[in-house]
Length: 251
Image (cartoon, rainbow, N blue to C red; front, side):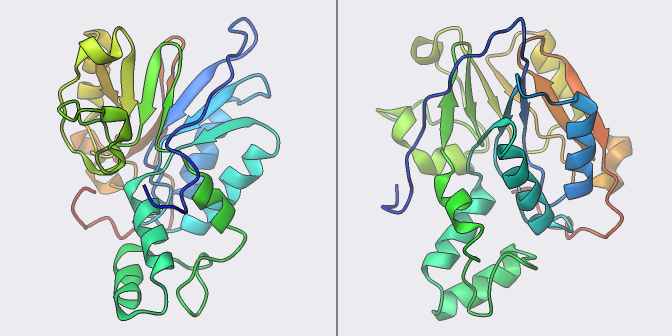
């Protein structure tokens, strides 16, 4: 973990289940209008907890709008945010800003209108948020992470690179017990997400590839929120009007 990162994880307060609901959303990828519509659909209240599992930026048309909305939500609601691989790449480029590598990296990975200055450094209003992002959360009944864990490592909960980048992993129930792992990172067809829920799989991917709106007939192209208390899926179709740079491979 880089010295600038605040922590791998943080403690999450329990909520009264009779008053509040817990939701998880992953891989918004610059789809600000779709994200706002989903938050409106779940009718988020001050008694709820919202967990965002990373990859807020890139690919979609409005990364700045997504970060602005998350930061605004955190002022009034209990919103807990994880780091995704795209936030990590942006932070690495920021640390190297001024060097030739950073100049090449950001235009490729980030449609950063409004997030970086002319020197390719992250604007100060976004830096505290990005630096504060944890790598995983442990709840009483779940582990939440962007990509997954390396259960072959001596300590899976210290392998931060895997938490951001792993594409496939086998859950070791001797380590996590009955807690299920909720993650994103690799877009999954809606049918398969529902099957992971229904069949009691030890991990559930909640990335339905929102940014890939042209693949909706194939089962992608939606942003979803998972109710962690009932395992109900709340769906929001991609409503972005500006073209996304989603022709790149799934990352």
